[in-house]
Image (cartoon, rainbow, N blue to C red; front, side, top):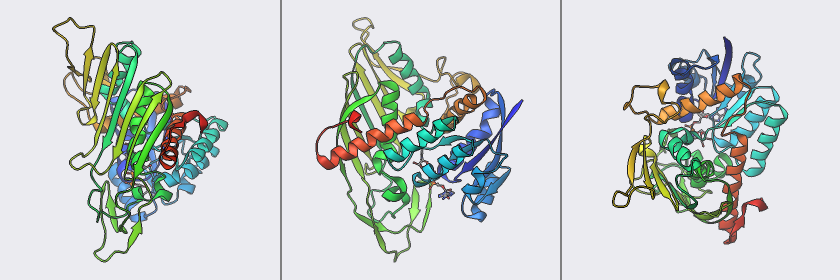
Length: 386
Ligand SMILES: NC(=O)c1ccc[n+]([C@@H]2O[C@H](COP(=O)([O-])OP(=O)(O)OC[C@H]3O[C@@H](n4cnc5c(N)ncnc54)[C@H](O)[C@@H]3O)[C@@H](O)[C@H]2O)c1
């Protein structure tokens, strides 16, 4: 059997999620290659060594430059913050490695385009980490929409609400610094519903947005882990130069209208991603925290029996479910990463395109940039103008 050796950059939140995905893949799915977790990379030797041992990597590197030039690596997976994506992905692609990169693809649209061009030039397989596409209810929503069950789509409503920075003393982490993350709530959270909307409904035509930074300075961070962070009591403050909250409306190429909201200032909402799509024959409602369930209304149901029904979306129809557990044994967040890795590994072994790839990353960056421009200029921006 063919073997594929992976090198992963980053060992924290997404580093752990991706490590888990590679570790689970061969146990549950039949791939056409054996996937070897060859090396994990981070700058701090002590931490990266510990992570390699804990997550099951054969070895580690402290320099991504060394990792991407290793002869024994076939795939580079990037889970470091967004300011590193372009340089690592381009170096990896130029070395002939296939590249999986977390979202958002890059700090801005022009960098994202450059990454796509280099990937195409080097004929490598490339995928972006829009993992929410792989949740059971989203896969079912896609099937229903593609089968025409919603009729002509008229409205899209999506929001992604968190609350981890509501405290003005929450430290200045990298997610609040433009030179590292590129964009605030919009790039961090909005990127996901932009991608889901493109996946389910189609391309955006124009957007009109408004963005705001509520807390303009914060204490410099000392330690961070996942979405938690601490600063020292006497820490100096630094400037927050990204959006804390973003809202925008849009028109889609197919004529549908969209309303969107991304914020990390919505008290009580922990990871509240939701999307509703309404057509003239039906509607769907999806909430990530109940990702195994889809609410579906059909105007074709008999009069007197109409109403939203709750479908257990992991049963029967979910394309990845047979690899997991018997019926009724639902799956969770970490499984979405295994599913995306399954598609990526298949694209490498079977030499076929995968989805979502860097071109989806470019489109997402284009919409993010259009919302930012629109917010600055206070008028509608046509996506085709960028
Ligand atoms: N798909 C999703 O749902 C999702 C969720 C969270 C984050 N993300 C994305 O994943 C990426 C990482 O986010 P995170 O939350 O895992 O961040 P994190 O801060 O938890 O981890 C970042 C990791 O990158 C490492 N790193 C930073 N600079 C490096 C460098 N120059 N060389 C090597 N390693 C370096 C850090 O040591 C750390 O291990 C971001 O692009 C983010 O937008 C995606």
